[in-house]
Length: 81
Image (cartoon, rainbow, N blue to C red; front, side, top):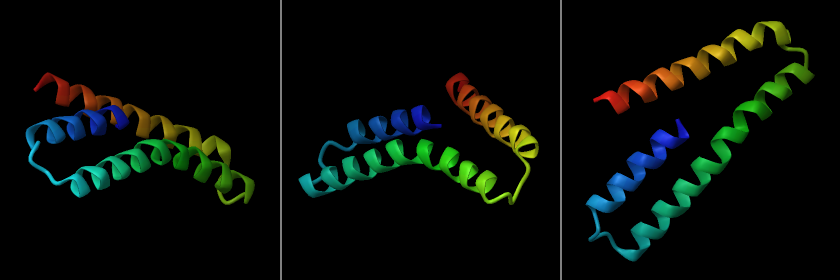
């Protein structure tokens, strides 16, 4: 999903070159925050859940695999069109 977000952000940035410098700066900051922290937050949240014994680790693996498969399939369908 991060690659998909990156490609959409770059396309948007290239199609709107008349943006103000403030808009470009905020866009870059938002892009960096979401790109860097989003992939880190999912494993950290899962680790916290496991450490607090809220959910069994064996039940979490299928959920993570389903999220991964859905993300890949969504990305591949966007490439095809």
